[in-house]
Length: 83
Image 1 (cartoon, rainbow, N blue to C red):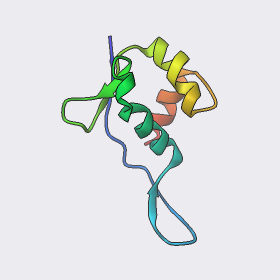
Image 2 (image 1 turned 90 degrees about the horizontal axis):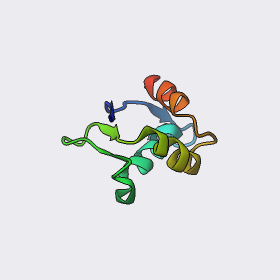
Image 3 (image 1 turned 45 degrees about the horizontal axis):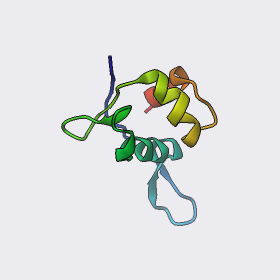
């Protein structure tokens, strides 16, 4: 069973240049999902505005620690829900 996640809209404004940039969490999440070599674990939805975590245990164990300081799927979802 996969977990469907909708697109995110979180942005930050840098003080130096007044440019709008995505929050670090969103950048890391995008990189994680956009990696084609992990499509069997997590991939973009059909329309490209959502992503599906196909195998949550492997996602938490094998992928999250490469991008974040934890391997807790619930913590990832909780942070994602803030966006």
